[in-house]
Length: 106
Ligand code: SF4
Ligand code: SF4
Image (cartoon, rainbow, N blue to C red):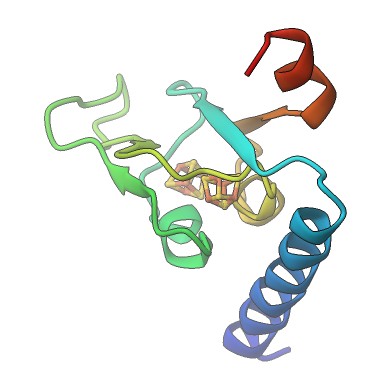
């Protein structure tokens, strides 16, 4: 299997899904939670994130000696591709739905 092609296909799919979600007024705002116990700082999540909002925290080191992944800026859409690609299943994705925004008066 060609991993690079597989990643590109996944990223293309997420971008297409993201456009469809935006057009349908569906979730476009999200955030991630990275479990430092499992993160091994491999940077795969950062490399596949379509929004380029993940980096390895330069000021934190896990118990295993890795710089863990974290959000570095606004812009996460909650697409979930980082969680799908993480080999350690260390990422949980949270999405804010249009209904939640409406309920919050946003
Ligand atoms: S893909 Fe998973 S293990 Fe690798 S840096 Fe991201 S969160 Fe950590
Ligand atoms: S959920 Fe999507 S946009 Fe948010 S950090 Fe993960 S890959 Fe990037």
